[in-house]
Image (cartoon, rainbow, N blue to C red; front, side, top):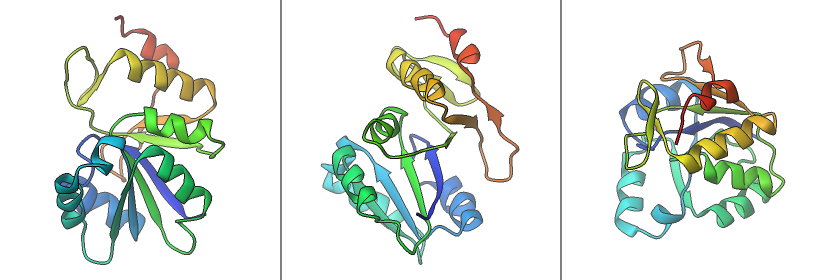
Length: 163
C-alpha cells in the first residue's frame, strides 16, 4: 500500500494541504472520506478543482472508501487520506483496514464542541472516536504542517474535555 498520510482537517483540500502536505509527501491522489460531500456534486467539483496539477482527488462515502481501499485504490501511487472528523477513520479500522497513525489538523468550532488545541474543537462523538482510536493503538498527533514535530494526543489529554 502507498498511503503516505492520514489527516483529519475539516477544510479538506485548502492552501495548507495543497502547498505543504501534498508536495512534502509527494501525494499523487487525495482520498476524501465523507458521506455528506460524496453526495454533493458542487462541493465535490470545488474540492477537485482545488487539487494541484499532478494530483487527483477522489471523494467517496465511508462504505465506498472501504471498498476502494480493500481493492487497492492506492496501488502504485502515493495517496493521502483526508477526513473532516475521526469517525470515518474509525469506520475504516472497524472494517479491518489497518491504520497506525493519524495526523489531526484543523477542526473548526461548532455547536456542542469544546476547544482542545489551537484550532481543534471536539464534540462528544468526536471525543469518543478519538478515545477509541487511542484504545486501538492508533497514534494520534496534532500537527499543523508536515515539518512540525507534532504533539501526541492521549486519552489523558481528552479526559480534560467535559461534556
